[in-house]
Image (cartoon, rainbow, N blue to C red; front, side, top):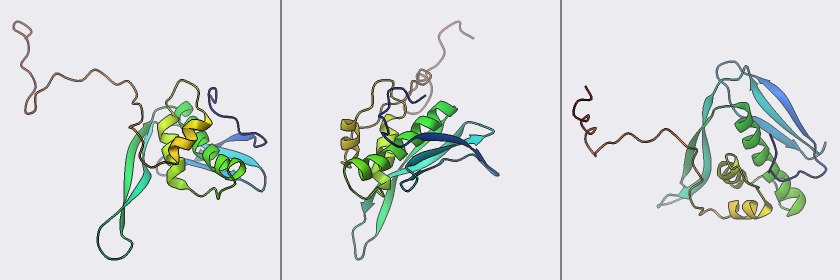
Length: 163
């Protein structure tokens, strides 16, 4: 499940069940004292959605007012949950252990995980460096059902003899 993802040298990855009460959600942590990454997968597993804040934009005016920029994602299977959580926690590890920074850059970790959890090819440190920049191209989208032929206001009429 972690094939193609960057290694967390010296930090073993543990996958544990997450018993949820009202709805499944994302939960994981990196313990720098114990040098481990713990990912919690919802049990029982049901597909679920999360709204992920990946950046903040300052609002004009007095004071430090801002609005969160978010992306809604749907996690359809355990593999997607594990990959997303691992990438998020790996970014915390990489920021602290490799770059020597504080590992608390939540929005950068979210950008890195959002951009790469569905990728089939190799995820590298270069991708992590890209996530440190706020302006990123849109993440690749999962293949969905082909779009319905529609105009701006109504669906195209059915072909003659189709009814």
